[in-house]
Length: 173
Image 1 (cartoon, rainbow, N blue to C red):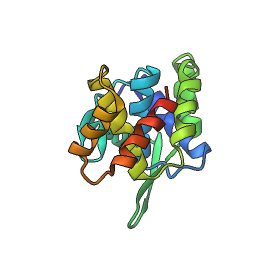
Image 2: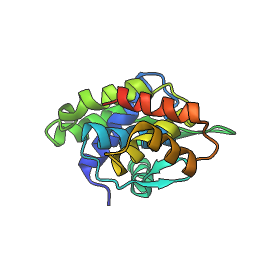
Image 3: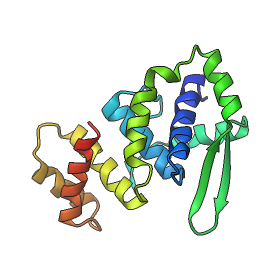
Image 4: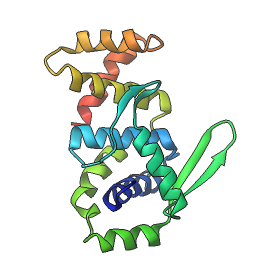
């Protein structure tokens, strides 16, 4: 079951992405939450695994559905492009207030991450989030090794784009 804190944090990501005119589809939400958790130590409870398009959380996918069911999120389908999520701000604000404004503790970190990622395309999000995942798995390895690893698991990514992903990942630290 999704906790109130997880819903507040996920809702904060959605709100922040929307405030920055992001598509705010599930990929943007997932990658922003993963990076905020991994690099900025925002306490998302969802566990992430390396999946088709980079780090992904089945827990977070369930939380998004749970939040839709409770009216905290709405989802607008966009044929051919996926769905856009939006936050029910009054309901989210009431939940946050009931939890002693927990979002304020993490707002600056979430705003920072979402500010960088909001307008990235899905391919860039995949590269950057996967680079961060690999860096966490191999903290003692250099960028060339990590770029080679990225290409070995994501052969559609060029060496130049793999190297660039690690540069962009450093900007998030």
